[in-house]
Length: 254
Image (cartoon, rainbow, N blue to C red):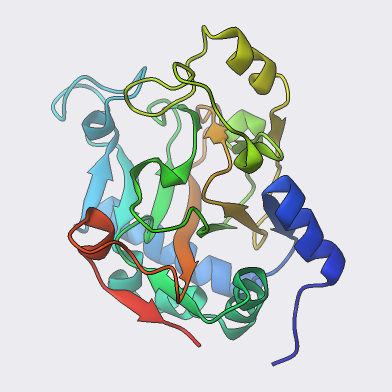
C-alpha cells in the first residue's frame, strides 16, 4: 500500500504529539458503528463501564444514584462487533501507523479497545492526563486512535490537547496520586493555558501520542457523543510481561 501520510504530517505528529485526519472514515461506516453503539447502550450489553464506577468529579455517587447506570464506555469493542474490528484493522490506518512507528503495527486489546459514550447531564469531565500513566510498555511510544462518530466540540465534551506536551519532562509534585495534572500547581496552570480544543466531525480521526496531555469537558448538549478508541504500538515495543498491558491479546496487523 502507498504511504498515506506526507512527511509534513509525520513531522507535525512528532512535534505536536497529535495528527488530525479529516473525513478519514466514510459516513456509512460511522453510521453502522453508531447504530451498534446505541443498541448496545440501550440494552446494556456487557462489558461496559458506568460513570459511577469511575468516580470523577460530578459523577453519580453509586450505581443506584440518579444517573448511576449511565454508560461511560462500551468495553471490548474489537470483540463486540465486526464493524469495530474492521475499523481497527483498516489497512490505510495501519499503513499510516506503520509510518509513524517505522515498523510493523500491533493493536493492544488491554487498553482503550472501546467506544467512549458521553451522555448529556451525567457525562463527566476528564482532567488533564496522558494515556501512558497506566500502561506498561518498555517505551512511551504508543498511539491512541480516536474516531468521532458524530460532531465533537467544546460544548459536548470534545477532546482538548496541550500540543507538544509529550516532550515535556515533569517535576515531582505536578501530578496527583491518579497521575492527573494538579490544577493548583503554577507550572500546570501555565500548561493549561496552552490547551486547545480540537473540534471533530463525523468520520474525523485524531492520532495522539501516549505521552500527550489531553482532557475533555462535560457534555452540555442534549445528544449522546460517541467515539471509537483503540491503542497501537510498534511490534518491537511489546507489553511488559506480568502487567495489565500483557493481560489481553495483542494482535499483529501487518
